[in-house]
Image 1: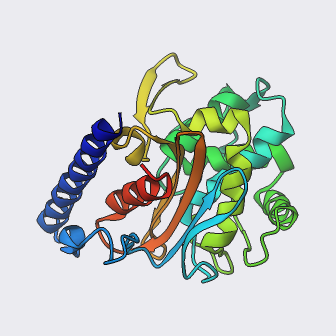
Image 2 (image 1 turned 30 degrees about the vertical axis):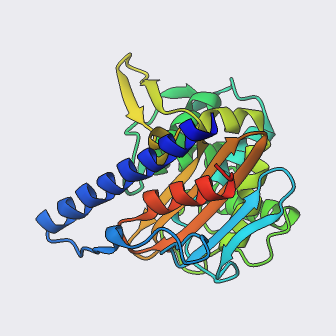
Length: 289
């Protein structure tokens, strides 16, 4: 079994590398800044992973024990990874099969959007699923408004929940992670959200969903792939959430399980094209595969 794993894991890391190289070529074609760090080494001379993200924090998902860290307390924009906090608040509020009526204000947001329309109704459970799988900003607004009456009131609830979780270097302004003044967190703090979400059965099931079929109010069905590429490329990954804005860079919270151990890796502020490969290697190394 061990020899088989020694073959499989390098194979998946190689596939992740190929994906990163293809992405880099795509960026070149669209005149986007490129980064040739996809050929950079995975580990240093001691075998410790080399991760290009600005801030990194890896913990045991059950105990919270720190496994790896790099600038863990540096304040950064978490982008859509903070939707995990939005989802946690909604999930803990319960009544997930309750219908939510979409209002016009919910739709007035930048992409990524689900594209639902004012007057349509969906259950909280349906909206929660598409929020985490496809990272829809309009759905985040809808759930926040339904929960608290306004975006501002929900942001206050987010900050109270963050405080309860022991997050001392975070402040949230909106439910979706779109750029806003005075909105920030750290890799260490985001790991606390992730750990709480990982312990929630509803959320843990959703973030492990690779493909979601969403039925719109008019009967149309649209299929969404999970934005977390590691979930499909690495067999021991079981979640969690991606994020990206120009200001934040690429962000990712990835979880994995193997041999009775569960780990969570937080990567914030990656400006390279290797975040998927680096996250895969971090999970593999942390799980001692």
